Image (cartoon, rainbow, N blue to C red; front, side, top):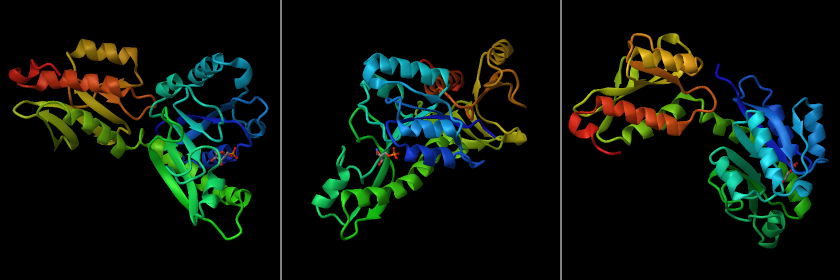
Length: 311
Ligand code: GRF
């Protein structure tokens, strides 16, 4: 089984969503683990709870530290080998540089059906507008407040007589259901064979005159009028690996790559010396790098008139 994706949860208060994520992660088949809980308030009650649950806790004071808070947090997330950041009642505006660093790897939960009722007073606004249905949303975090791509929502009925407090309490129940489920789906994008194949396919077929067909029992990518330049291998010959196979210069490069990172690179069975296997089921796959591998491999397989093309 692939490594679990390491998640940091950032909170500012009670941390009930954080707790929901921690408890959901105790299921054997949960694809993530809560590897760190931190935030901007060193005495947030949720931090004590995380500690009691034997999760690593980092107490930082956002107010005192000022801008260096974000640098410190960044270093700590790196030290803890965090893959994904989940915000759960984290009350600090996040600088664009931090969001950029975590682009595609940072998500948040908000107690309304976004894009309706962004900001801090969602429940009051729902009641004032006389809406009959509200809910909660998990979304990717982008530079704009409560505005990233929506990953999932749950609707919650507004009852006659509800006030902001009673509504918040009921929406919170839905939050606790939604967040662990969506986080699991979100991180699985990086470990599930179908999701990985989709990403490889998008990059491979973006290359000029590239096409796909099954070969050697795996999805293969070739250049029309040329040869195969990549294969997507999912548990091929029962090897338990999900990997991309691309062309390289030969046995020397193959050995060098494997010696440099024996976990990620391997010699693909039955393919010989001019191919390398690159595992995609380890955390931290660098997709820009995968794109470079594909492009280079495509050049070796393309007919001359195409191979010379700038891409
Ligand atoms: C939740 O309602 C969440 O949607 C919002 O802040 C609240 C945090 O609650 N962003 P908790 O700390 O998770 O209990």
